[in-house]
Image 1 (cartoon, helix red, strand yellow):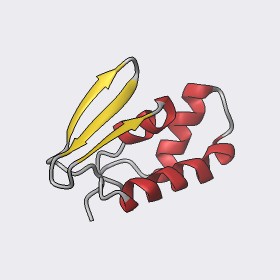
Image 2: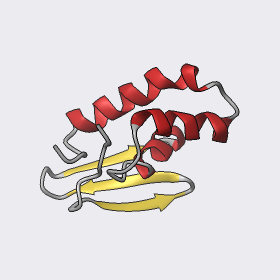
Image 3: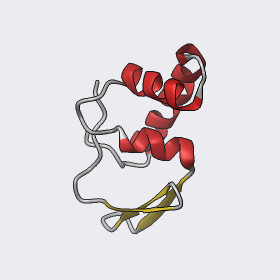
Length: 85
């Protein structure tokens, strides 16, 4: 599965962190730097494996150390209804 952000969400970037306004659910989400990096790659074309690889390169870590973190964050985005079904 290649995660994709819901098209109706409003997002703003402030100091490398993403703020998401979900008007449908009346919620605002503030993502930290790591979650923001993951969010920005939820384009419907990038796999979770590729997201973890890009994060590893950006943060100087091993990809296998980030696979679970990416999966957990994507699961949270799904739980919050931020991704396309």
